[in-house]
Length: 195
Image (cartoon, rainbow, N blue to C red; front, side, top):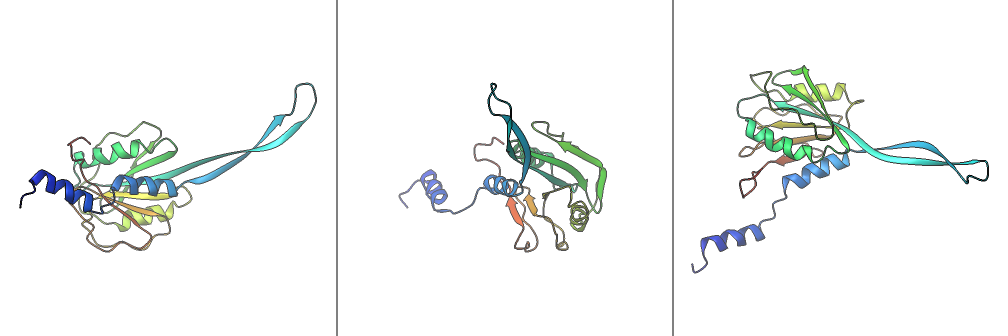
């Protein structure tokens, strides 16, 4: 009873074992990277003829981002998600789609480096997670994984053959138990009020 309320809050934060959703998102994107290799030739010396073979290696990935168009996924939550994805877009290509009960393929936006798409809506209606799952499975040759930005309020989708991440908007939770291979990332606003 003698400990102040601010000190109690700090002690609870120290004891709590919550994992930061940003680090889980970073881990998901990092584990979705694939290695690239190309052959290179290097000249041994200017005085002598001849080249020696070598290899250049790099890491890149392409991730689909499906944006739930239901009303409970507000622009503020999307801006928070986009701000964190923007920091991961240096070596990763994000391709965004809008969906409700179907994926709007005309809303496809390729997002490279710091070119984040603007928050806008192309659909409204119910939510069906089978639509992005089927779309990602059909395009598994294009994507190394996919993220669904949603409020989590729909029934469980069919299994997927592509790595899947659930980015849940603040104040909501997934209404079903995710598959063991799925990454679940419940977003939270930063404590200082900055996104």
